[in-house]
Image 1 (cartoon, helix red, strand yellow):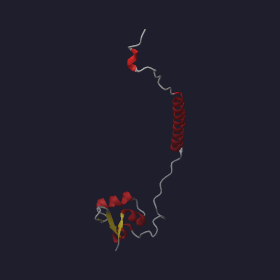
Image 2: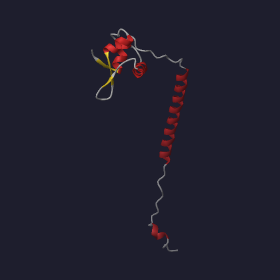
Image 3: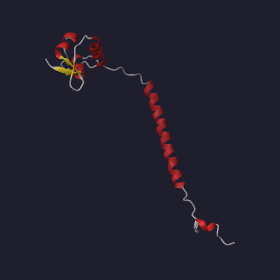
Image 4: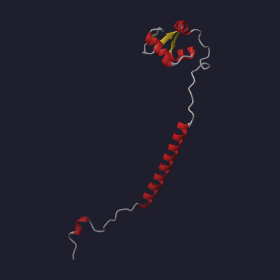
Length: 118
């Protein structure tokens, strides 16, 4: 049969990457290492251990639980405050650049300040 990468095996079995690696480490599923050092799993091994394969891996893709939004709202508030602070700092920098005064230059060369006549 065919050999599959871990990502392909994930799609075919509907199992997580962690589960596949755990089963390989414990010896439940045999694998080989290709020339690049990546693990490959045989189709028969996947069927033997996980049962019938999924034709389309997206149908049984593991879902991630969504948070209730409280953490997100705190992060959004912090980002908004930081953006406001950055805008204020930009405004202050522009004001400072406008107030920049060029250093006064004396008309006489520096060495003549000691030779001035009284």
